[in-house]
Length: 268
Image 1 (cartoon, rainbow, N blue to C red):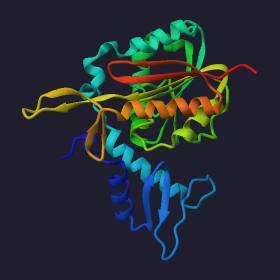
Image 2: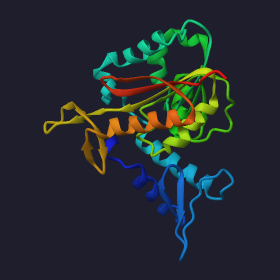
Image 3: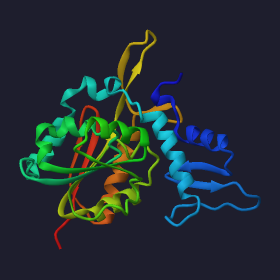
Image 4: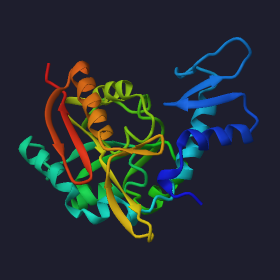
């Protein structure tokens, strides 16, 4: 069986669509291309008839790849200081972790990373988690009942209102095939004025060597080839989208497991 990073989301989703005998092809970012003679149509709007099919295909694919994700085989497991850049950002940007905060985390799976980040302080917060995987959500509800889990996509979450102090999107925007521009715009909508947006891009993995021993490697997989420059290019794209959307760019930090980009929604 292929290990998690060898599974391609598009391949899994399309296998699911074929098994269901559905006339669509998954092409990423909740885009479905209808296979009809002489024409193509993309479904990206909420009222599109194919959207429920797209959600189901993405749920199946992300549940297959990440629903049972083993954090013990994650690069963060050998870099316990991965949180330091976040703590530095919160401290230097005067984000008070000891006060009640309303937080939304996109693509946070079962919510384990929020336990790692906030620990006992999370009792002060209202935390909403949005993930596409129903398997991850079920696991999260069992393990972290204090979090509010919702199934959805990071590009558009109309069931959430715009009153968050902190938006988190950690190591997700590069792995999901998400529309970066739409994702950043949605993060801006969801934040209060002066709220912080923290996005990160993974810059490495743990991969088995010839003896099967997990070793850290730098870069991201692109067409099954490791590209060391890709994380920095994606982080640059995120920065550009943040500036164009209206964020004040506060920090860009390269950590041992990911590149953090932090923006603030300005006061009017």
